[in-house]
Every structure is written in C-alpha cells, then in structure tokens.
Image 1 (cartoon, rainbow, N blue to C red):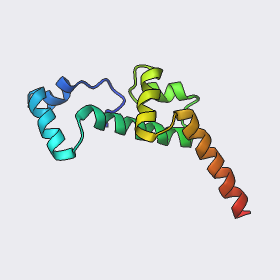
Image 2: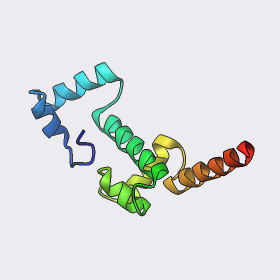
Image 3: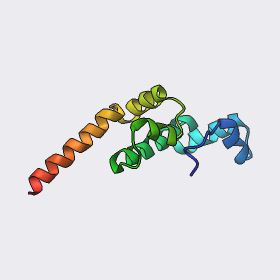
Length: 105
C-alpha cells in the first residue's frame, strides 16, 4: 500500500516488531525474496500498470510516483526486473496494440 513512500528496512522491521536482521531472515524464508528485491518488483509492477494506462505525463513522473529517487536507478531496476528499458517496454506495448487492432479489423 505504501510502495511509493520512502521505505527503509528499519521502518518495516519496526512495524513488524522485529530487528532488521530478524525481519530479513523471516521475509526471505517466507517469500524467497529479499525485502528490497520484493519492494522493487512491486514498484516496477505499478510502474508498468501506469505506463500502459497513461496515468502520468512521462516516464520520470511514474518513476518518482512509484518510489524511486532517481531516474537512473529506476531505469536500471526496470531493466533488471522486466528485461527492457521503460521506453522499450512502452514501445513494445503500443506496437502490440496496433498489431492486435489490425488483425481484429
């Protein structure tokens, strides 16, 4: 729910009434992900939704709204999670829509 906020491991562990170290072990054991990798995947998933629904005027605003502090980091994490840059992802999405519309006609 707060993926767009600044979230630290210490803050999340405190909410769970655990030390950061205990929280990390618990989280990884039960999810198979580190807290940071899980948070990044949630943020990138939201960014993808926003990209394809045109909820923001540009990619930079999506990055900041989803909790990333820099465009460089957003682009790096996006490519790591999705496999392509946000721009390529958006271009591929639009190209697929055009192809689907042509075949439906």
